Amino acid sequence: MYKVMLVDDDYPVLELLSNAIDWNKLDMEVMGLFENGAVALEAAQAETPDIIVTDIGMPRMNGLELIRELKDKHPRIRVAILSCHNEFHFAQQAMKLNVQDYLLKDTLDPEDLQKLLKQFRTSLDEEKDTLEQQSQLRHLVDRNREQHKESFLRATIHEPLLNEGVWSREAEAFGLRISGRSCLPVACYIDSQRMARQRFVSDDVLRFALNNMLEEVLHSEEPEAVHFTYDVLRSFIFIPSVNGIKTNPYDRVLPLLAKLQSMVDKTLKIRISFMIGKIGMNPTDIKQELNGLLGAYGQRFYMKAKSIAKKEPVIYSERDLFAVYDEAVSSLREMLIESNPTKVQPMIEHWMAYLRTNCFPPETVKDWILKLVLDLKLKLKSMQLFRNHFSVEVLHRELLEMDTLEEMGEWMVHFFTSFYIVAEEVKVLSKRPEVLDACQYVSLHLNRKISLDEVAEQLFLNPSYFSRLFKKETGETFIEYVSRMKVARAKELLDQTNMSVARICESLGYDNHSYFIKMFKTVAGATPLEYRGISEGKDYRIEK
Image 1 (spheres, one colour):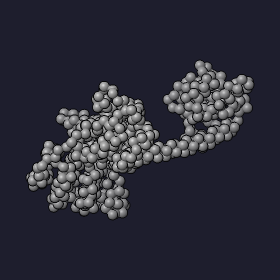
Image 2 (spheres, rainbow, N blue to C red; image 1 turned 180 degrees about the horizontal axis):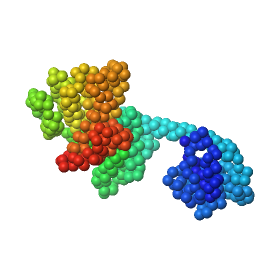
Image 3 (cartoon, rainbow, N blue to C red; image 1 turned 135 degrees about the vertical axis):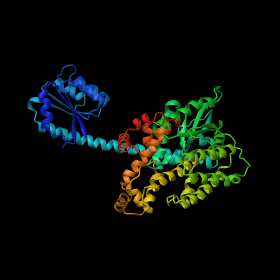
Image 4 (cartoon, rainbow, N blue to C red; image 1 turned 180 degrees about the vertical axis):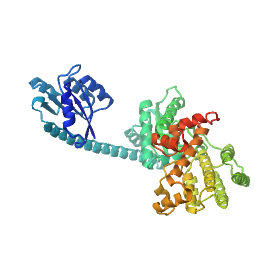
């Protein structure tokens, strides 16, 4: 709906125009009636109109001055002058300002203005379509450019470097100028990649958002640095520097990388880490260092979120990790039998610390954790807590996708804690397996939106039948149950962390802050901030 501003010091004229035209039919709304140009200009600075219908002769600021001010900032605004002046010099000035029409009050027929407004709407629609097409073309060009940059990077890493001169010219076409310079390559990783991918619609959207954010910051902070995407989770930043400069390039790059981390976390709610390579003096050196960074899988595996580290060799422990396997399984089984969810995190942290301290090979660690989880899955199943949502294939795939020990630890805490939540529900809910499966699914997916249709599809049930079944067996609707579980999780975060309400809202899959607060108050009887105030006597853990 297009916004229209009416400006005239003759208020009856404003009322006439406001009431004589069916604005809704024109897909327009009157954003205000203004008696002089100065007041109208102030309002337009807060909310830009699409169309202005204005008088010329007004106190404080006349119509021509108003048009001039607005056209300087918003050239696409449509303007119609409505005046009692018919002198030629007024018409001349209006033409110079690209005014679309000049109407005389004495002979004005509202239908004439309505026809003119229809023309404005048509031209605005056409312009909008044109701008969208141009935007799509620009996006296509940018996307093709990014694809070429990615292909260039992959060829540099994986194919023989036959001609350094050709390589340098291709790199310069992408903005990377290294002639007579050294170059510092830096690997960039997305931390907690499973959560990051869940927050975005697709890998393409995640890749696009992160690339834009990094390039925007680099452009303002280090214009000669260039970012190349390798895949959705990994990319490289090249930072050229003039040979012979005494400033340590490593010291110079640290504030830049910290700024990138801060902006990406603040804007996209994504945590990223960096691994800094060695300075390359020529294309061959750069290629070698890129391969080294890409192959530094062991160091990456033990990096914590939002780390900045130099690439270093990793020395793995020669101890047998599986020698402590029985001890780990026994301790976790005892924890499950005790049914005390507060012990989950300390227990997982204990074993993660053991793995980190001893620095076992990543593949060995993954095999050990997968075997551990599968064995405990059987234990959970025997306790009638485990349902069917985690097949062996799903567990194997999810663990393989994680590239850091820290993320695997977070996943394990979530995996085991979720069963206790369902165990409490089992005490009061139906024994129907469909209902227990639904509760299990909710517990494991509290970090995103959950719909009734989605869960019914997972259970191979008709949504209407599932809805009636759930209400009959539990006494509450499925949506009410989801809200209650999310509020319970929100209370835990309010009690145990200093996370902001907005961040808790996002972590539970809500994109509407106001809706989350209203829902929380409906379930808990208080807003999140009121609840935190009531609980402020408790000890809070600092958000990591």
